[in-house]
Image (tube, rainbow, N blue to C red):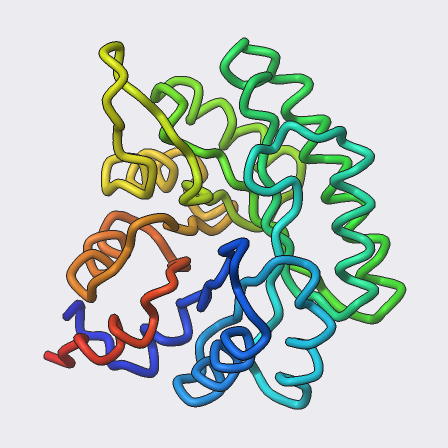
Length: 241
């Protein structure tokens, strides 16, 4: 698939467990799997950051955590505090959720200010601990039309973010008749995001990526990081031809 071996694809995966019901034993297993397969990171809620930092110390696997998750509707000050606190506790990467409501209302100056404040807080906190912390900006694309996605990507680039990211996986979009709509990553959205940001930042596809084929499709569309709770299954299903 894509001429990439399992080691290469593993290095693009954020091995994720963000369920509210996640237990310590499951987080320990997540870290062990990340070490075995050499995933890019484990992505966990901030409560587990110190534990993961300890489990993964002296390894190449990073600790990623989420900020303003999953709604993005908390205050900017809260997001900055969350991010800084996580870095102080050992986080290497921060995935923040934008203010989706502001984006839907077209209040893009507020969206950009929200992102910029987190980025600035992260850069300052990272410098204090001697780390270059990566910031990924979650757009929650299932709620946004294409022009809004494009503008939000532009906001993230101007704010200095390192990645734009599709989804939390926790969105609950509905059609006019009340039926559920897809809430995760799509090839269309990933392609649109890559076209918009070019090589100015990375693109993370996240939400509903369960198989090697799905991961391959996202990478072909322009993703250079994959967020998934199915990393082991993806690696085991990856063919190297």
